[in-house]
Image (tube, rainbow, N blue to C red; front, side):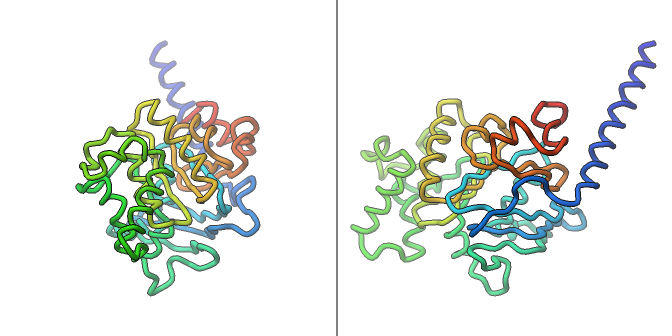
Amino acid sequence: MKETTAATKTAIDSKSSAKQNLEVDQAQATVGKAFCENPKMSMRDVNVFYGDKQAIYDVSVDIAKNEVIAMIGPSGCGKSTFLRSLNRMNDTVDGCQVKGEVLLDGDNIYQQNLDVVELRARVGMVFQKPNPFPKSIFENIAYGPKIHGLADSRVDLDEIVEDSLRKAGLWEEVKDRLHQPGTGLSGGQQQRLCIARAIAVSPEVILMDEPCSALDPIATARIEELIEELSQNFTIAIVTHSMQQAARVSNRTAYFHLGKLIEVNPTEQVFTMPEHQLTEAYITGRFG
């Protein structure tokens, strides 16, 4: 009897998985509000390949100026791969190829002869694990402005460092130890240092790939408050595995499944009345 039950359960699970895959295949277009007027970034028919394996399928979406958009979905659904395509970070991965258009203020960032260093100054990135340089707190922040010629004098550099640390909510905690190693800070402080380092070069967009996954709840709350503050001056795209975090920090939420963008809608709607049944299944915990 138990064997019959187990076999039946396996058949049901297989049928459910096949149904979900079929639903994704049948989804010819993303549902919801994927586009907006006068977007800061526009992605059209973006496909990403790792060698012969396709990771992203025909994703089209806009990101508005000063918007916080959260990207959610099961592990391996492609959300981090898509995020990294927004500042050509995938260029550093052997065998990775991106097709389609990624527009920043109307210009395709994948056009030939584009200065990728300048692009990544305009579209900064904060990674999952804090990665401060093996330099002082001051030099961590000052490095980018020096490279990009944003400071004409030491006074200018001091102002940029202080302003960046203030925007990252870190100035009061480190102002008396700016010449100590950045690696000596706590995990949450290191992540805010990395955010300060990103904004020191005056980016227009900040990409965040699970920036709180390695942090405790108190540090996570501080980063989430910071995201809300930064959105007044920056456009932010964040990948998160925490649906609660997406609900707290974002204006719109994009749900990815098996490399496809299933739904994009205002965050409150996604978590209360999602349009697509795959989104609802993920939100309610039926899979993922």
